[in-house]
Image (tube, rainbow, N blue to C red):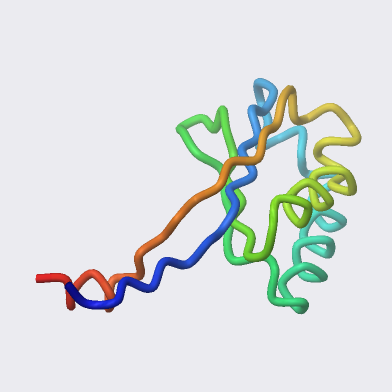
Length: 103
């Protein structure tokens, strides 16, 4: 069996309010600046709204649980009540190129 390189990430899961896409606009620039700060440190991987219309958002972080928790604590979407509830879950990822070598 080949060596499996599992990338450990954490998923920040937001449950968002109704009409989230419209209500987030006054806070979007600040939210994106915060994401950029985490990205420059190599901690933020990607994120986005889920659903049509969105009822959740997923944000992926490298590092440990505290990185994602720290983002949520500072996120204007959380601070202004656009996020009804949030949680952080570990996500073990096998990158595609590693998966290809498992066959």
